[in-house]
Length: 312
Image (cartoon, rainbow, N blue to C red; front, side, top):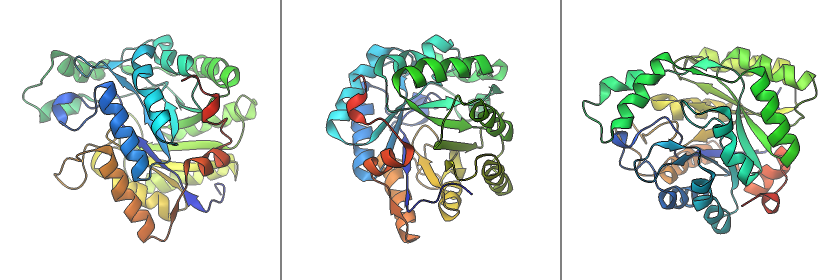
């Protein structure tokens, strides 16, 4: 069984590197928009804010630490949320580029993908006859022949040079059952230490499908591998988002929402902000008689170093 917890952690993934500007006018792209939406999500009840950076000129994913530094200090100064900086970056970035923002900012948390995989975004091409920027079509089409690289060597490097060197702990992103076993391998070697924050991910083409039986299976395997040394969280892509995170909450887990994972706030209705999705899931949780973990409660649960020890 996952660690027993009295309160639910809400993670909000504010922008990501999957969705493109054409897909929603509400997707935050500039540093100011990312900061404003992140702060509003925290005020709505988000415990952790998971962040990528975007080129403010055209909304394309960027690894630039300078861009991260345009919004991270503002978020920290305006709210108490745990700030989680990606190491996944965007398609086509080198490992060094993907790590650049986190290495510069030394956050309390970073994401860490637990295995290489196909990561297909190209089916979204059929939904949009035209795109606002030329890079958007290339970005989606290139995913047809793209492997999201996360080798054992890559993972070791991140664990050592970011985790051990700077005290950053991780949101372990597991897109398939094998990724759970990869994480168990690093646990057995002593390269990661409990408590683990295991984010199981459903509905990405190339990863495990958004099937309710898969959610139950992933939880069962995680329990088998990690016992009570981990906290379990769930995210699901697109229309599966709210249904799957509700299942997670009912099963004693944590939840992740945000415009990185889904652009919608109901069938056929674009979410107007990240805060709107947070308010929706918070209402669901409270109607299930569940309490929301504060950022400081999450810091204690996940053994984080605290906001005063970051580099921004």
